[in-house]
Image (cartoon, rainbow, N blue to C red):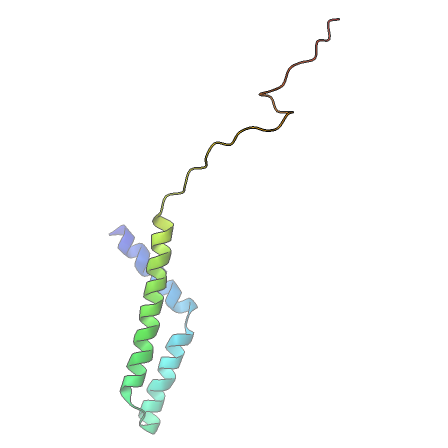
Amino acid sequence: MNRLISFLGSFALNLMLNIWGGLIAAVLLVLHFKLGLPMWCFWTVLACWLVGIGAKTLFLHWVASQPDAPEKPKENKNPYSQKGYKPIDTKR
């Protein structure tokens, strides 16, 4: 349930951030009522916009749910590091 609420919140945020597709659909709806443009133009643009935003949101949720790849241990090649450090004999 928590993942669904998280997805819906992200979907709503994406809809607000990508409002241009909705504006195009609104213009087509106005043109339908004013000029008699076919209604299927409005529904097609609206559906493409919603499906596109939904696919992008699903992809981003999938990417965010993937675990981080652990880093492979690297060989210490620094000659001045503590591992290879030998103290200088100061008791001569």
